[in-house]
Image (cartoon, rainbow, N blue to C red):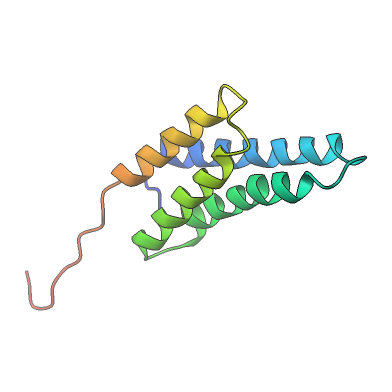
Length: 110
């Protein structure tokens, strides 16, 4: 979906950050696994949705943007305590929503 290099790098940084935070929570909560039912789906699930929307959905801009925005929303909830991740997530949401839609050509139009 992203044609701008900055947007692609931002998406990779956000996905990496969410994945690393998920690994950290997994390691920190091995003795008490119940909170992992919240932490892992929101962190890793958000990362997967952003990854799918940013890089794997081709041709459907609406689905791609929806996946990125929902993934950022899921990742925003558990990362509100950090300083950098909420800013990165909100920046990715704003840049995703503001991204230009591809212009569809009508049949017979020159």
